[in-house]
Amino acid sequence: MNSTRKTALVAGIFYLITFVSMPTLGLYSSVKGKDFIISSGADTGALWGCFLEVIVGLAGIGTAVTLFPVVKRQNEGMALGFVATRTLEAAMIFTGVASILSLVTLHQDLGTATGANAASLVTIGASHVATYNWAFTVGQSLMPVANAVLLGTLMYRSGLVPRVIPVMGLIGAPLQLSAVILTMFGVIDRTSVATGILVIPDFIWELSLGIYLVVKGFKPCPITDAMRAADTPPAYRDVVVS
Image (cartoon, rainbow, N blue to C red; front, side, top):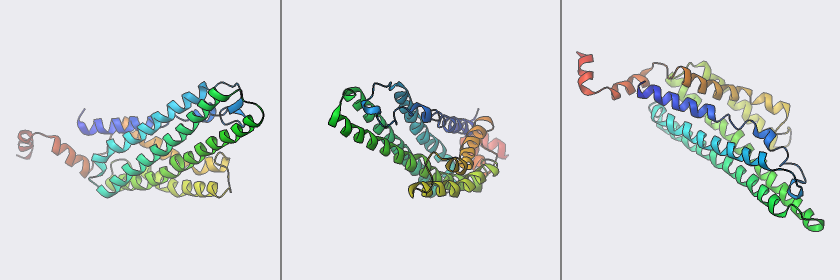
């Protein structure tokens, strides 16, 4: 396995790892309840959800760092932009995780409060949930739009993968952006059916990219040719040329 194939494999694995947080919708369900902070409910699910989201944030950065040396050969500015948006996405994920962990801590320490203290704690708990929800909207809904535009364009122009894959991302980006805007202005809910439909193309783009990179690697193209040439020792390069 040459270095180009290894790079594709690692990037693909990182992309597939970013899907491990899908169960968090169920894991956070009890934590997002109105009175969770003053209840005796279990918080183990929330802790697992936070753990999975931390993995997702780190894997997202991993995708950008792994792909950067490759896609910068197509356009270094856009490649840097992709690293930046992936990093911002991870930062917003960690912000949401910190909000949930803070809520869990308050629940563990102050879960027996009653009366006026209980009412104030419920308000505090709701603010932590709201922070998580908006961090999710910005980090895991808005940032993927920028990721799809930047990386999708790089992949389409370079031919590193079949063009139908980045086309799906370029189609999905404006659809997901519209979902984010409609959510921000209260037209649709962030967990509504309409939102789910609008994000499907972007979901397919990232999943299919990860699977293709793991199974097939990069397609032969000028970028991969240049990378293989750079990996070839000078003596062998002279033999091939002669």
